[in-house]
Length: 157
Image (cartoon, rainbow, N blue to C red):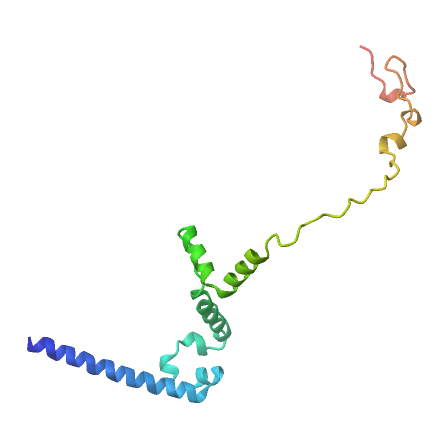
């Protein structure tokens, strides 16, 4: 039993040291203030991932971290419609809009304007009407022999 108490006391002391160091580091970060200066601070380097202070990955890591922090607050999916409805009802703007819709719904009678008469356009001629079959060149009949050169004629056997 004494050993267990000793371990618990040691853990509490370690946690207290960690919290003290954490407060000291956060105070240093608050004093520096600017993101670039924090990343470049040699004293804070052991606590910062190398991908943040290496030149080629610094900007992409900052953007990625900001995007991840933003996306944490947005639910990825809803298990059922009740959850989605409840979430929407928590949003003050959504509730205000819904209340306004309920108050003003069908307050004014909707009367559509008189339909405007559409002028009838003259019919455009189709391609078939433009190109008349009588203007096409006649195809020679199959029974008539046309003027084929001798070298192209079939030889009789």
